[in-house]
Image (tube, rainbow, N blue to C red; front, side, top):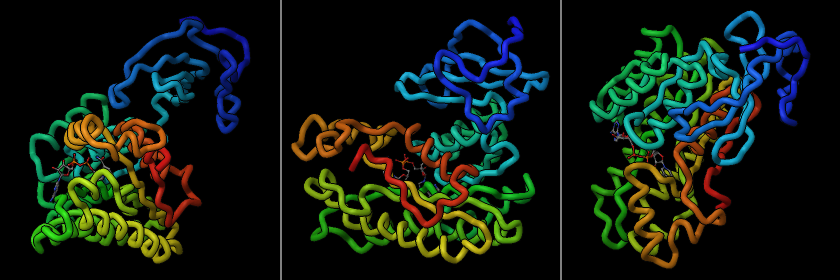
Length: 330
Ligand SMILES: NC(=O)c1ccc[n+]([C@@H]2O[C@H](COP(=O)([O-])OP(=O)(O)OC[C@H]3O[C@@H](n4cnc5c(N)ncnc54)[C@H](O)[C@@H]3O)[C@@H](O)[C@H]2O)c1
């Protein structure tokens, strides 16, 4: 690598953000484009090192992902450095993608799930990439494990800055066939762990007067045609609408403590478990997920994780009580 003497905060027409301290943009290094694989994005990122000083933490990359969007990465100076994040349902799907994305930005993770192997796999992906992750296995809709999850963050890392209430799921049945057990199961799965973990984390966040709480709602909060027409999903829709009510109220309760409470509402996302079912519908029914979505495609787990990252970061410091749709325009 050659260190040049030119002063520049721009490479190939892409400007470094003005918030970067100017003293960091006094050396221009690595004149060659390089490729590296961002494991958690599952996309190749074409990037270029544009600025560096004598401190190895202060290296900046600018580039484009294979999705075509502009993307700027501050190498090793993560947006969540020194922060501790708790993620529920982190063994699979969106929880896994969210955990990896937060870890990538420097957060230390405390991960909860009921599936031992899946949870261990998420944690090992984080530690192999140089991050820190602790796991708590258990049914997080029970009070004991939910409290233990949050307390593990405080015991191991001394704090909890971010809570992602990701845990959720559905049992789809038409309303005239839905059993009381199915209804109760869906309410419990989507709302109980969210309540228990939020209550526990709030006490710690209030003491430090800082914190970000993000809950997973869904496009289903307003009804989902491809589910409603073909399978039924009123329990799930009711629970995901309740997430919106929950974050609206808790945001008001915790505002005076500078704690932000928001939700992300994904549309149809191509996760390992839900993706195959959504694709099957795309191939077989009229009101299919992709046809009913203005962007005409399923979303990627990483696209949901990026929205959660924004709400978990200081960039969202004045955003609270908001449900952010990540649903391709629906
Ligand atoms: N995938 C989608 O298209 C989509 C769309 C909108 C909203 N969502 C929401 O996003 C969140 C994640 O969805 P996903 O598709 O990644 O789900 P998923 O089923 O792939 O993963 C859920 C995780 O939660 C864990 N889990 C289930 N019950 C548990 C319990 N009682 N205690 C602890 N862990 C438990 C599972 O083991 C799994 O690892 C959910 O709240 C879901 O409603 C998903």
